[in-house]
Image (cartoon, rainbow, N blue to C red; front, side, top):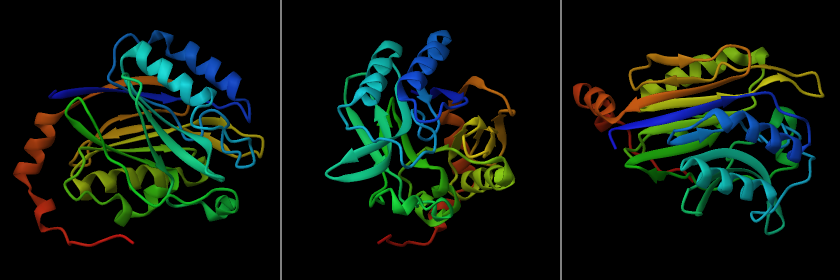
Length: 254
């Protein structure tokens, strides 16, 4: 498939109320009739409450994502608090229409909020293939670490789901562009809006950026549901014209 449609869900989140959040997103997404990928914010069922009750991989929220994936015939991406083998993870779920699931566990834990005291760190990056596209999903704080995001010619789209506060939104805007340019990849950032119970404010600015760092779409400060179409031909043209990736340093992440 030379084109892929991506639906960005920039929304508020209800604190520690999974059922209410799932119900809200279900209603919000009723208007989406045709898309290839739907991307939800970080911890979309609880907001950024690290003490909230974690679910299992066969719990209600993952099943909701699988049902939505089948209903929309689309890949669904979003992170949840998941308990697995006695550990709690900030886990990005990739739910496919065929009922299969892949996941990525957040690698870089946000020490300013003591995330490492609640969450177990992930130890591997993930790339999923869907409709001929290679997608690398990461989570929020990962955006600040270019080595971990580095494209070793293994992805076409780099996705960040986030709860990124307004106080540092300039970092979000600039780093998304930097990641696109240095990796010659589409970059998609999906952030929440609103204010949480701790008084932390979020102003969205969800975005899609092309491989040359040009902004295809950037959201405002309010809730928004936006579908953007990206082109494999345009991506390959940019890479062929400026083959910078072939000159990149080789390294191994431990």
